[in-house]
Length: 249
Ligand code: ADP
Ligand code: MG
Image 1 (cartoon, protein in one colour):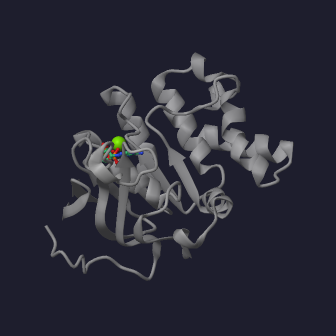
Image 2 (cartoon, rainbow, N blue to C red):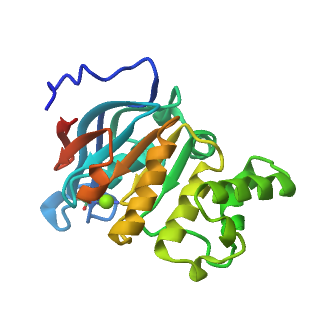
């Protein structure tokens, strides 16, 4: 455990930073407002509660905590997929709360790679076309997209699977395609939400090896309640009921 000031966290080389971030959701109640008379009272859930953190390049940080502790919500805030109810999130020196939805999309395209538990590959496209897809928005020519996607798939050990569709690949292979896709735009930050949740121990290990390599030059944030995954991280930020309750180094 480190003191709650988290004084050990460097700020100079920060890729992503949260300052006092809270995210609440309102459940029930049509407009999200409490109605007079209590006919349909809305319930406010605090998914992330006053979390501050700083993550630098070279770190593979685990977000740990039981189901419902706020890992996914915090990961989405760090990735610029969502914005906080209060507090600020800064990704690659840009404060996300100031941005329009479109600007946030652009920020993600430029700086963030995202890996999901269920891979989220497009089933009708080949592995190579899935990896190449983010590069369309960046204006790469078809030839350069193909070259880059082939290189990345080779790096993740799938040079013999370029033309396979997701349905023709194992879970571990699909997740490696998803990691290659996340790297296509050369992001400074990679976030992965339960990336080994669907995988057996051995294929999970391969994906974790890959994420550890990725973290050599980037910041990687891994949300997981899987011990095997968390054991590979350089440090763990532990959440309970949305709050940062401590770290494990
Ligand atoms: P974890 O990933 O650790 O399982 P989540 O971030 O998914 O946790 O959820 C944290 C809490 O916030 C839970 O109580 C969950 O039900 C709630 N929550 C998350 N997303 C929403 C949403 N879109 N609407 C309402 N409540 C939500
Ligand atoms: Mg989750």
